[in-house]
Image 1 (cartoon, rainbow, N blue to C red):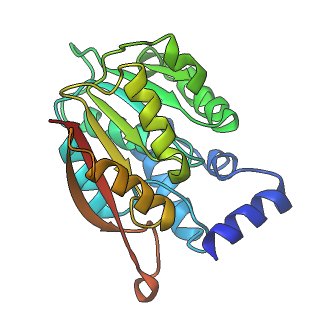
Image 2 (image 1 turned 90 degrees about the vertical axis):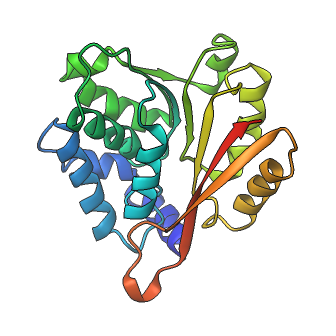
Length: 229
């Protein structure tokens, strides 16, 4: 039902969640952008909005990415929630000075344009962020990432993972952190079975809940961490 509500509202109002969130942004500080996005998610509990607003999943994500600097992030229609969670965490724990952070982002065009408007106002952050398309991955053959994050349409997880393996972005010592590996039901199961049955991979699971579900309606969700053996 929440997926139906989200799709119906997008068609009826002819705008995206990212556009609705962007209208509420009053500060370009990462922690305040995170707060604005999560307030929107909470108010739109009847919608299906991907992100890291669940405390257990957010903490698991931050624990997994600590001390890493090169990221490829597949993001959904949420104004880059996970990227701003990551930036806020970095700013809170020492900042960017003396570090070579790289954030490559793949998302839909509208979300990309709205995020670029924010980064245009923060040149010190903008130099760390680059937006890619899936078609760009062949040009980044063998690009060295520390962490790859999946937070987009779960139905695309398996095909995107195979593309990353093909072009060498997923390699030894790289972590793939895949969010929403329960809540998308069949698509989640297909991805989990794909990686857990692969003898060349190690997997680890972090349990959480789907974002902003009322307490009397909560259901499980989680994060799968995938590495090469």
